[in-house]
Amino acid sequence: RWQKIFMIPLWNKMAVFWNKMFLTIIVLLIVLFLDAVREVRKYSSVHVNEKAANVNTNAFDHIQMKLFRSQRNLYLSGFSLFLWLVLRRTVTLLTQLAKGMTSHACLETQVNDATEAARKYMAENERLQE
Image (cartoon, rainbow, N blue to C red; front, side, top):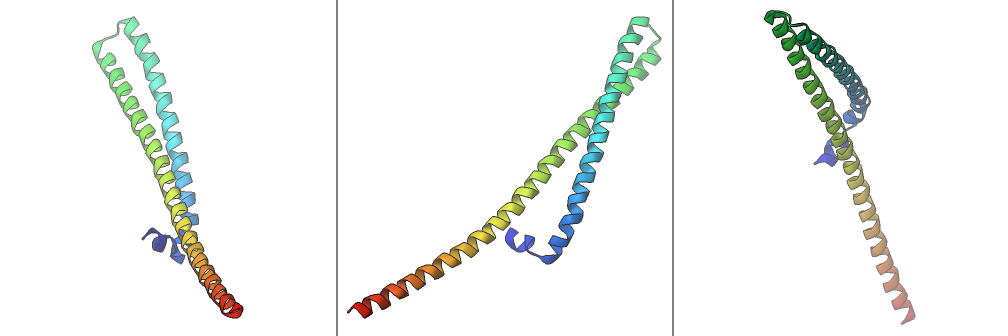
């Protein structure tokens, strides 16, 4: 089934476009991940300073809220980046498998044809020797 899907001529034309889109999304996810890391570091250091200064509870809660949001964004962007890389690897392996199955089928037909030709020539050789 994959062999038929990946051998469609339209797929080859779209493959170049999708490869660029994959790379663009990976770069976007890396930027989001790095921004989330920066935000977590920023609010983690503010958290320590504000707690030491004994500020009012509203400011402390606000900082905790921002820290929670930045940590949430960090986890979401990190897992999204990881899963996107897994998806890319899976598609790459499926493509290679489809190409390998195609070449395997071609080689198998060549081997069968060569075997039949060898049998035919051996039979002819035996007839000639008799």
